[in-house]
Image (cartoon, rainbow, N blue to C red):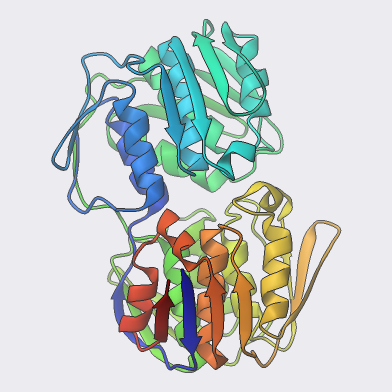
Amino acid sequence: MRAIIKRSKVGGKVRAPPSKSQAIRLIFYSLLSKVEIEDMPDSEDIKDAIDAVTALGVKMEGRELIPPPSPYVKENYVKFRGSATTLRFFIPIVASIGGEIVIDADYPLRDRPIRRIVEALSTKGVSFSSHSLPVKLSGKIKDDIVEIPGDESSQYVSGLIYGMIMKGGGKIIIKPPVSSSSYIKMTASLLKNFGGKVDFQGNVISVERGKDMIPFKGKVPGDYALSSFYAISSIITGGRLKITGLDVPEDYFGDHSIVEIFRNMGVTSQWEDNSWNVEQGELRGIKVNVDDAPDLAVSISALATAVPSLTIIEGVERLKIKESDRISTIITTVKAFGGDAHYDKGKIEIVGGKIKEGFISCPSDHRIAMMAGALATYDGGVVDNACCVNKSNPRFWKDLASLGAKVSLVG
């Protein structure tokens, strides 16, 4: 599918798309207690997460996810679409439960690394047929302490937290650097709210299962990072936008920090009453480190394309192993829409200015498609493979059009 966007003025009011990160964590929580999600997202990543827990004994009845008396490996084979989060939660959870299963995925997820978790668990009673997908996992973690490097993905750590709670408790030691720590904190916060005991100090996480794990019934909070692409469209085209359904920003650096980052870039940007309000201001470049929330690099780069001064984004090394090599695809997209960008010594440097009409053939990376779609609202553009937004936000093009963007979907 191709999205053809013409010069537009974007503004109005829109509900934030549900947080993919929170939704996946809630779905995996159904291994511990009943979960009823009132607004279950329809994205491909969410379907992967549901497939993961049903393969471990969870029953889905309507919008309810009902845990088994004790999780077990129900299926001997599972194939995910493209959710790296689901894959990286699933491996340590299965290893904690114990059993045998073959895990596979579609491309490009099949090419994503899993070496760190394989190496960490191979000394703990779990065997793996390879260091990449497809992989056969068999055995069970025999120790209450697992040590894992933190440089590949924090999602393994989150999966281990769930696994340790299922085992009754344990300790996770993260070999520095502790990257994407905001997502570990998100997992810890969710499980503590439901009765688990998770203590995250420095690079050590101590986990205990609570006596009673509280069932969940409610809506998924809005996603700040996904919402930022609506905000960018409005900012660069001179509109005013209110994005509703966003929880109070946490006090640690995370996806919600985009509100403050955009404010630092000169945008009138504020959170109030579960809404994020944005309006164009005098834009300026900034220097920011996104190591704790690397997905924000795409959003910051998009806005930086409209900024005539230098923006420096540090902490981007792990962008190379996302849905695409995002260092490369961010730079390509910035240049396609008239900005200048390059990578140097662990950082992306961008000097933008007047955005021009651009064309992007999206490399099956949902955030790059949304970045290009947002930039195209200024002076037009084309996004090939536009359907890749279905991975996280199937509503993206429809929402953008409802805010005034002139979007045509072809094919």
